[in-house]
Length: 210
Image (cartoon, rainbow, N blue to C red; front, side, top):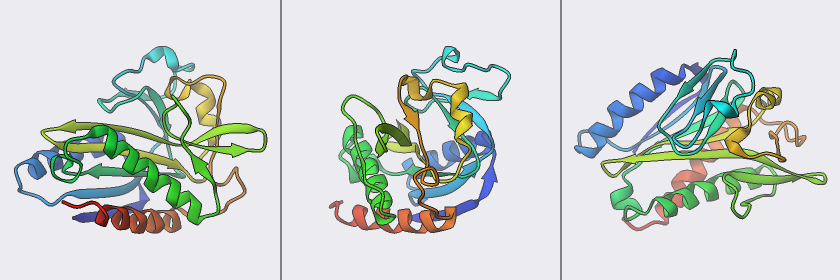
């Protein structure tokens, strides 16, 4: 498996998308190892396969359609992206639900290492935390599988500009807020979180028999 740590870099969304498509085709043909890619994006709103521009409240802000699962979300600096180009055929018996739960567990354990108690919320996508009396979303998940290989992945809010979420209905979910590690008073750098998430991801993957 190849780990690409670009966590300190800002990479254009379209460039990363094109690169993922190249990689998953090679992985499916056994011409490349599986890849896990950490990075950040420029400020942009992405519209997933079940999303609509109606969930973008300010149309003047750059947005792009993509083929990941889910609806509309925000990407920008201070948000760690982990793209996972994994052979779901071999590692997860082609069970997309199992793979999503695996990724959710990686996020929860990563946050736990920074003393943040995160959890899943019934019938709600992503990973959630309690912030005072509020329940708020701290991480999003959106994947797609082509020829047995997953792509896209997760986004975790570390110290991003949360006001950007005010211009959309994040993931189609109303009446709930969005938070970050910083807004929870947990200061950590992108690099620190990336290193811990990478460690936990690989540890959890070793527990799965191939």
